[in-house]
Image (cartoon, rainbow, N blue to C red):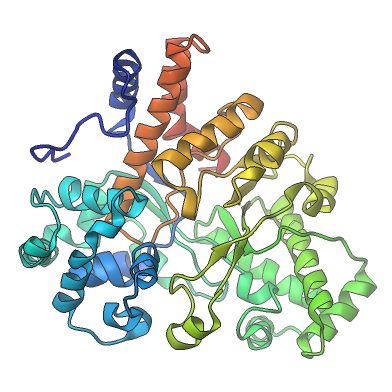
Length: 464
């Protein structure tokens, strides 16, 4: 990796000299290991079509809600950043970003972008109002060259596995076209939220499309059959997991008659809030049953209230920076699901949370008992150096390292993939080094764990 002058090679490692030396050796073991990314949001079209990135603003600012939300909080109109498809002069938007770059000091976003500019793009100049145009030109020049197209970067980054996130009715033709074109695997992921959540935009129309795709009558049984058929199609095209994003990890098992009646009420549009919640809970239960049957790993991302600002959602659409974490209850909410499937052979359930309090209180104890439950890596607001350290402290004493998922970058910002994995490797090396320095584990154990975290562990959990 490029090391510009002044960039600390020991960044994120402990300051204490003895512990830092241990951490440095651990990090050196894994720094260049292949990237295994079994959950992310890079659009498949970027790789299938190998289209050059549009411009620096689109690449670093417009589509990164980590960035736009903080700028918005400081009084900048999202329209000036190109959010929601607004037309902007990309250089003018970049200058605006550079003018407010100081706001990102100490944030994960600031660290990642620094790393992308310096480590990935090899730009020594620090971003600032005075250097905005020079940095913009350096980025624009790089991404215009063939060696900076997505496929070339995929190979340069050393990606062994990259999972996309896909609509259940996608024909996956781009995945098929891409097969064998890259040194690593690109896998689809089944994401059924729009077809199982009555509160999702266009839910009824989506269910109608799903049923039409399999010539199914509008019964609950045929609805489940249609979802099963689409899951099978994804598996045939390489999928290893199904991803579910929910505000509340609530599950319930209904008998066939009650489920049929509830389904008809929901698709008729007559269901109240309590009935819609019940349907979501039963469908999460059904998704687990299907994962037991077909082997898809079930990942559950819980605890986000989407589109908190109605006005912003109306003006700019979803994913425009105002999704906010909320507390969750995995222990009670998932009990019906785990009572039914928690001991099922081959079932893998990976739990992700933004509510840090659940790591030690609920997720680690669940993963420390149920063979099916694994601890999802720090996600979204928590995939940052200090939060990764807090995560390790919260779960390790109860569940160790083997019950985790390995690092999950969960990103659509392509250039940030190697940066995020490097951040996790440094943070984990720092944590392991502290355990060694304090005499809590032996060095050879730390070395084995460091090696396992970056490849073998996520391969086992995601059945790769």
